[in-house]
Image (cartoon, rainbow, N blue to C red; front, side, top):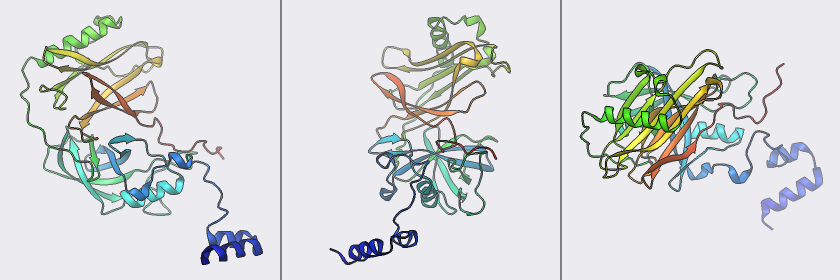
Length: 322
């Protein structure tokens, strides 16, 4: 028997007290909010992490989206102490990561303050929630012209994003995208007269899925204040696989706004390194918390390959309000 194991067994058997077990690191109560051991992210392997940037350009925040494990984006599951270790490893002042927008690197993001960098003053808290998703306060270093509010992505250096050749965007793509969005609405039984022209949004992005740009088109009105109010919502992606553009992803909603689920385009990035960008959408329901939905491309279609949490509270049960 090894010397330490022998000493440990003697001490525990002879004393059997909490103090002795504490010295040896034994007898610690399980962390109630943690996932089972087999589901926890192995931080000892320093996995690559993808982050989302949001907030004001001059006072941005960064939140972890997921970990890239064997080329697959997976949820980050950790105990309370594991999340603190994660914060110490990835989001402490002085850490820097490549900053991405529209599928390309545009600069650097620098961490100014981690979630628990000040032990007695976390960066934020939620009422009645002992464990929250860690945020970090960051600054942006870029020559790109950014809007007042920022929506971008960042990733550790192991996520390799290769530059793509520029694509020529035809002048009539917005009209094609609008027509495809209206077709998707009709096929879902939506009265297209309810889709206001001012609610139409369009962008063409270079995802690498085909030799032509991927089209993103949506009709998205602001939510009514009444959950029983009516809504009509459409978002599509369209790609040209050689025979003209066709809808490669559809999401629609109609009827009472209280039961509708919405989607909004955020950004795109090649997360798994296969040369085709993943597309990042934001999803939500009426007056509810948002979540991230990430789409991947295969066999001419886009489908959800990852969904983030819908709550920043990581506790299984919230503490009773005192």
